[in-house]
Length: 237
Image 1: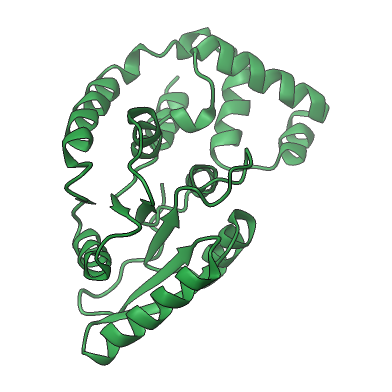
Image 2: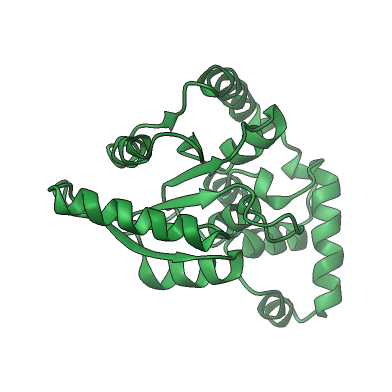
């Protein structure tokens, strides 16, 4: 994934963006970061959104340094915090992300987030100072997981490392040249209509190719793929 935002000086102010469906919580964060800035912390509240669609467009526009993301942004499929993170990664927006929730995540939920390069997790009812500590820790290049979920994080991180070792076992050799081209375009974020026009096929054919590729690779979603490694694999003759 490309660098997002661009490289920044170590002493630059950290610009935090938050996506949460509760306006009161967002205002609380704005006030908290404002107070911390007044006390000399190099941090600023860069903006907020209350839904995934607005969040995506604003993040693309504002280009903050880090994202605070509510896991349960919405219960509707396609609009959850996880869905927003998937969309960011599909568009190569490699912003550090701290997720939070009012309750602990299950193993499956945390694994889904970790597969998308989640940098940390906090409980929503925790100490506000933990939010600041987490943001600064992640911006220093580390991860930050609250004590309640740290053991699960360590176990799943080891599992993910093992899965990455087995990346080469994915059957890319089963894909036709056309399927490889479609997959490469999808992972690069090329719109469906543009892929169809470049290959001189219909949009519905692109959907057929997508389903066939998922079936051949034995995955449920393209977000399961490591984008840089997959693109490198596809560029290999």
